[in-house]
Length: 213
Ligand SMILES: Nc1ncnc2c1ncn2[C@@H]1O[C@H](COP(=O)(O)OP(=O)(O)O)[C@@H](O)[C@H]1O
Ligand SMILES: [Mg+2]
Image (cartoon, rainbow, N blue to C red; front, side, top):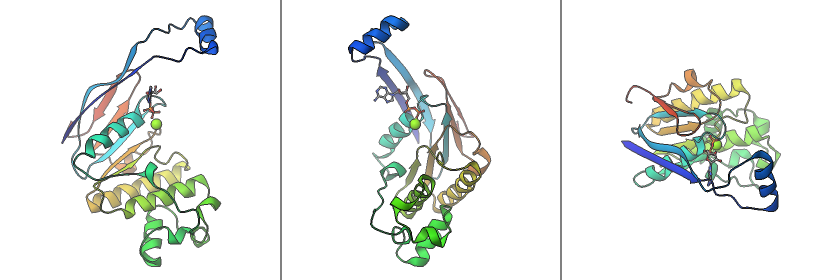
């Protein structure tokens, strides 16, 4: 399936006294200009593909994920990790799965296999542990066709990030889910084995690599 992405933002800014001071000090022109992030970017994504989006901060990864998600939502069911809400009153083990065995299975795939973490509540976890709990909840959703994770593994150490990247693509591929992740980290190539890699650069510059492109 081909998706065509076009995205531009206006550079219009609120002219507060401080903004005007900065404009004068740094010689910033405040005329309204459009800045283009995606100019007719055509991407082929088939069901079951693993898509790896990388690029520097501010280059347009999140914008691309959101626009792709919006397009896909028209015909597919999309599950976005950012939209997962944890119940603050329930221990980790009660947050996923229909029973304890299923819960531990899902949590292990998401990289949590410590019984002491299982009995804690979300507020008592580290950011990385909470992130992994959300991943477990994402892969629990087998109704979704597409799983999306922005800032993928950003709060994890790189060894854990790699293990989880490997596990996520394995689960996604075994269930035929499309998995799309975005992160500034470029070290997950081997673990994800992406069908498609999108490397976003500044302005509208972008590189798409993969066999089908
Ligand atoms: N709603 C918006 N209005 C104006 N500019 C935006 C908006 N959303 C994002 N941008 C700009 O688009 C660029 C890409 O943003 P984003 O996709 O969030 O980057 P990242 O690669 O870090 O995820 C940034 O320069 C950001 O400032
Ligand atoms: Mg982002």
